[in-house]
Image 1 (tube, helix red, strand yellow):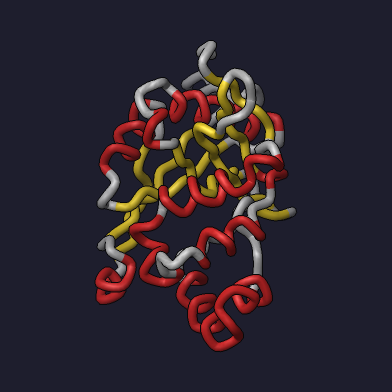
Image 2: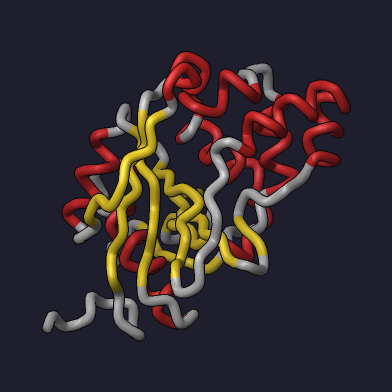
Length: 207
């Protein structure tokens, strides 16, 4: 762990707005065509982000959010929310069509699988090892929760993230292609990657 940051459970409530902005900025390429860039998306995420389902990297004194990683379980997700939350910011019609499109990006839970719900590092904090530290921490969390596999998706337009996952031992297991929807979401395919972990969050011994 670097002296310049520390990993904490959830995120400080005082940094909720920072968390919302960081999450949206990290995934703006695929979310902005649906949610827009007029400030409503950040307000929407500010409302729905659930700190019970994420880990964060904060500055040593805890006053700045440097990164976060979310996860999804049967009890909830970092970016849960519902139609009512969308309608509050976009109106019922605007919330309806946006909700239908966002549902296309949802991934189903499976027993024993710890599903990541996005990882983001602040632009001015990259190169400090925060992404690696967040993945290490969330793998430990998966092991503590009795999961033996961590799963994530990475889009084809984010090779930097994929390189990080590969360095951490994640392996591709399938590719989902969007077809014509690539023109809407801004990417053509998403690769599902998985990593086996032991009960302590580390890679289990091989055969």
